[in-house]
Length: 222
Length: 248
Image (tube, rainbow over all chains, first blue to last red; front, side, top):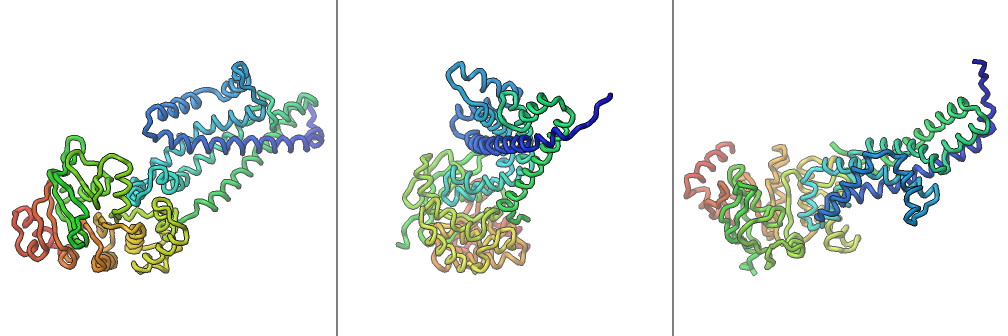
C-alpha cells in the first residue's frame, strides 16, 4: 500500500485529455443529430399506412434495444467490411451512437406523440392540412416538449456510451485516457480525472439542453 | 344563387363497430342557410357534421359538398376540407403558435398562398372577431371565449363556403358564451352558410333558418324555428325541448 498519488502526469497530459473531451463532444453531438433524425423519421414511419414500413421500424427498435452496444459497434466495425463496407473508427462510432440512440429516441418521441390530444390532429385535418403537415407543424413540437426531459436524459446516456467507442479506437476521452494510463501506469490519477471530465461534459450538455428548451419550448401552457 | 345546394347527404349510415350512430340521414343545405342541430347527447349530431368534412367516414349513402362527392380519394377529401371550416367544442388552437401563426398555418401550407397575404388575411379576420390586438399572444394567454373567437377566425382564414360548429359554447364559462354567440351571429348576418350543433336555443331562434332535432342517429323532425319551438310534432322533440328549455 505504498502508492503515492502523483497528479503531475495528469497535469502534463491535460492538453491531450481536453482534446479527448472535444472528441467525445464531437461524437456525442454528431450521434445525437443522427439519433434525432432517426427518431423523428422512425416515429413518422411507425405511423405509416404501409405495414412493411411499420414492421421495419418495430424490428429495428427491438433489435437495437435488446442487444449490447459493444456488439453493435463491433458488428459495424469488423463484420461490415467483410461485405465491402469499410468505415473509419470515427464514422463507425457516430453511426453506432446514432443508430443506438435513434432506437431509444423512437420509443421516447412516440410516447410524446401519443400524448398529443386527438383534437389537435383533427383541427389540422379540418383546416385542410395533410397528414405530413399535421405531424410536422402541429404534433411534433408539443410532442418533443412533452418528452424533452426523457430525450435529453437519453442523449446524456448516449454521450457517456461514447466511451465504449474506444473499443474500435475512435478518438475520444476514454481512448486518450487509456493511452496515457498505459504510458504512465497512473491508473487512479488518470481515471479519477477522467471521471470529472465526463461530469463536466454532462453538465455542459445539460446547460445546452436548457438553453434549447428556453429557446424553443417556452411557449406558455395553462 | 340563393338556391345553390352546398351540402347534400343522402341515406347516410354510419357505424362505430356494431353501434349505428347515423341512420338514414338525409340533409340538404343551400347556400346561405343557417341550420341548428340539436338533440340529446349520443343522438349523432356531432357525428353528422364530422362526416361532412370527413373527420368520420360513412359506410353507406352519399355526401356531396359544393359539387364534390366525398369518397375515399385524398383528392376529394382535400377539396371538401378546403371548402368547409370547423369550430370545435374544445377550441383546439395550436398551443405552440401565436394567435397569428395559428391563423396563417393552413393558408400557407394547404392553400399555398404567400406569407404576406396570409398575414393580411389573418389580421382581417382577427379584427372581425374583435381580437386583433391579441395577435401575438399564445392561446394559453387568452380566455376561453377569446380562444374560441380565434378558432373561428382561423377557420375563416381558409375562406370556407360552409362553417360547421360543434358545440362551440359548451366548454365556455357562462360569461363568455355571449361573445362567441355574438361572433357567430355576425357571421350569419354576413351570409355565411352554417351548421351549428348547439343547445343555445336563443341563438337558434335568432339566426336559424331551420332547426333539426336528432335522436338515436335519426333526424326526427325539422322546421323553421318559430314553428319548431311553438309546435313540435313529435313526442320525443317535445320531451327534449321541455328538458332543455326548463333551464333557460
